[in-house]
Length: 260
View (cartoon, rainbow, N blue to C red):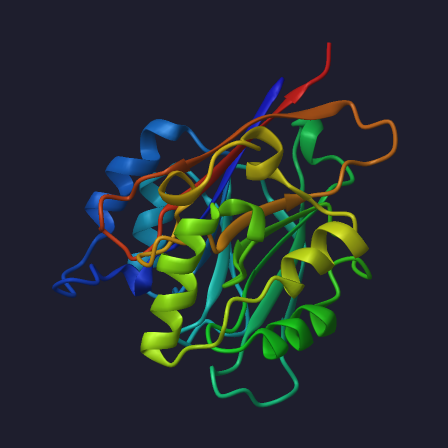
């Protein structure tokens, strides 16, 4: 009870991106040894794949948001009862599709979950302006979220050396006619809204390939947190887990520890 471990992962609708075969067994073999207390999942639908995944990870309490039938559906699975879930869908149209937000509290006797609000989202993959509109409408600060997880599709400039940035972000995006690299969303979350980037907090020196969570060699999956006043818990560790191409994202895991 002095440790709490959580993760976020985009599971690609539980299909391997290379052959579209079911990837549940591969993902379970990766996540089960981590002994998670909570996992936030993106690109899921309300079906047997989701329930089997949660069952094998011994996370019996689950919630899928209002986008459960959508390709961009999101959910949370927990070792502890999920209470007061709140679902939100974007109210405006985006080329990248509707996006969703879930926040909830957890019940039970674990001291970390007491009076703490958890949230998950999956933001637009095409346009930073749409991502900004989405996160502002979801308003994690207005909802007093303590831990925000998910596939943000957002970049952090400090993640990349100059050479890597030019070759793997600027040039790749120019060649593919994608949006130019933008950092407004990560700045908004960390500077204006005072969320802490858990991975960057623990690994300030890591860059380039070492921080990649997407197939394109960029970090777009995050766990953000805002410590409470006089918080009795601290961030002990945060690391990226290689999913061995079972899905098109790597996972991010954070571990919190009760202060002595």
